[in-house]
Image 1 (cartoon, chains in turn yellow, brown):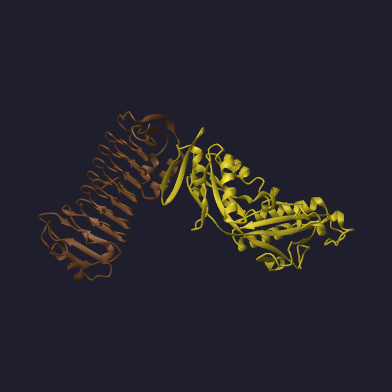
Image 2 (spheres, rainbow over the protein chains, first blue to last red):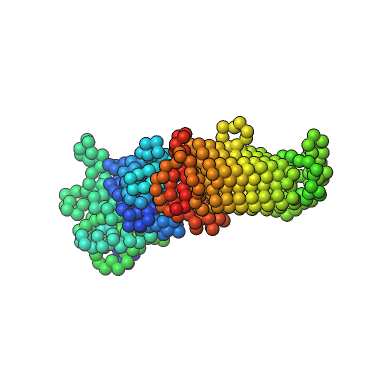
Length: 297
Length: 267
């Protein structure tokens, strides 16, 4: 199968169940809401070492937020509710509470919840105040700038982590250009994030390594500089491979993002992008399988 | 549902606890007429005082004036009552859910010991609205009370949780001994507001007179909480009040007790 002259491998991305939440960060100034969101989602590329995968879902207009100020929607994914709760407490406490003008709200509805402001309120040293409006509870925490307002709890839900695309280019520049086109399109899909820098990872990994202390190591089958010395998955003309990892609030969101990314990457690809593939573990580990060709059909 | 039309104003006070949506649901008008409705110590039935008919819609319709009919909607847990004409004392006493819409004014103690639901009064509310039962440690514990006109003395006294909105003026002792919750007053705020309040917020949009010495001026602030409050008021159809919420002067108090409450006063 080819799309815009680009070969689409007959393979699938293998993804896993995760626990997810959406937070809404608002500020008087959208620039500062973005600063806070960027800070909170920093160092959140992979649960392997970061404990959580997070990213900005989209920017919100003032009329879309609870307090009528511009904001940013952020998605966070972790391996369990406990891990997510710890990451949310630490990241909101260090990156949102600290940022001038911000407030933080839950962005999902549901019965399963983790603490949000409830865990941070003690920073008020007894001067914090709880307020209930419209069935929701908020904490007002006095800070030097004024007051930090934070919703008491954040609903959580099942999510999907580890959807992925591998973009195989005939040059480093071509692979990056294709990935940038893909990311621009994927960011328009609601309910999905691409947690790596700029949405793109150059260091896709395989499970395990020859070192006992390392649980994941470089995906040598897709490393162009090793083509001649390993069982390579690359054709002779492939010079660079980039990966896009997708986490979503649903399998549908991940699939939609992958499809949008493939179509954008293949549009105006010229002869720079040779193939699109995906990473999997033979289908034995993940609960979700995203066939590249079925997503495009 | 059911429409009840008062035949004549009773010579003494009636207690209308029987007229709850959950009790009247599914009953035919004749069955409703036979429900007990005591007049003082004299036993009687609903049909003695009301003409009962079937009506469209989910709400119980009561055509008043019911100035001498007390405890309408007392303890209700769901459904709705639409009351046309003034109501007697203890409207919505201890109500836990549902809604009461009053086109008129309410007598003493409306929403006393309220636990949930919505009570909307288009006119005025006499003393003790959203207050506590005599001797109780706490008053209203949840829900929303909206008064279009003025409230008498001790509105929201001992408020434990919930939202009380007074479109007009509030009498003396508004929010006295408040434990938590929020009171919004669109008109003049009477003396002794927030006296001995422990926590909670009283928002005075037309300013306030001299406050007790237990309140400390903390300056004017544009609080995000107030933006949330304004948005919430707008969802309740109170756009006029919502638009008046802006930067407010914060007085923390009452230091005579824990001092963790606040009066937010239009500067």
